[in-house]
Image (cartoon, rainbow, N blue to C red):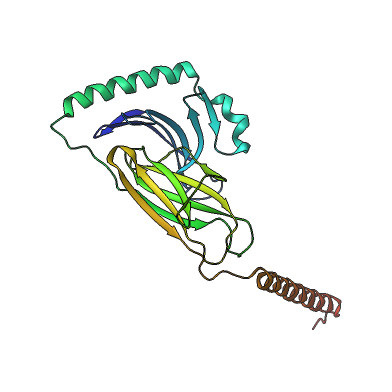
Length: 251
């Protein structure tokens, strides 16, 4: 089923499908596969993505005219996606509808916008002096037109930065993720700045190292846990072996 939807000046065409898969269960869980195409006045003017239960699996690179897998493991299924000719037709329809709805709503309806909400966290447990990744998750995006920048101690950081394409959400909003490869040091202050160019509006999220685990302590704890588990399983095995060799008494 194809259902066009519009809010303000953003038009999203969403194809939703449900799939249930769980053999041997009374109430199999349901899953949501979404195929989302959007167009808007601000860059990026077009966007297209496939998601499964809210996780992006493919996105279409409009400048290059081909599909991109979110993860390398999805590469074998890229060929099963829509062709560029089909996407071109859908894109033309999206732009035509956007123009019509914009002309109708201009001066009559307010332009709907969401205030970006940013959160910064590390991909791995924090260890000072050990390479890690900072993740800036930006939600409540509407329309999908923002830029993300990183700063360390107030200085711009561009090396090791990777920002994803937009993730469509069920409420016709968007998520965006930006990754920064870094080595945390004591006293670090990192900021993730989300800017909406047209409105000169920015959201800033800060990150500072809190309660880091010293690498030597972490290694000692992990080693101790491994030894304790080894002793426990060895003792359990000895007890079971002794019990299995005891003669059985029949009354």
